[in-house]
Length: 135
Image (cartoon, rainbow, N blue to C red):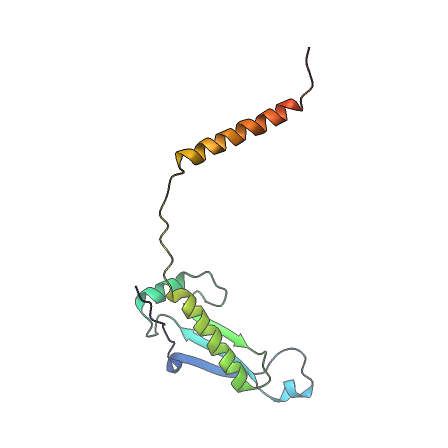
């Protein structure tokens, strides 16, 4: 089974420049270098199974309306923050693109059950040897 990488279409992503928070001196008050990325999962061209897994993710960046909101402000330039936000969105989609492996229930072997019971018996003997000696 070959898995194809699901790539986010940049045309479906809404990007807005905002002023960054935190330290940065006078520059932070003048330049809108931070980026707010919004991506509507339901309206996107992603495959339906990937959409369902994205919406099922328990991620704080995904709102109740099914919109991914990513704020990038670590870089000094708007272009750097834009690239960082798109990279983080793609990583989120990549995580949802791979279906989880199906867990198949197995039973312990008879030998492993016997080993477990022997270990329990041995441990019980060690503990009973610590008890006070009764006449």
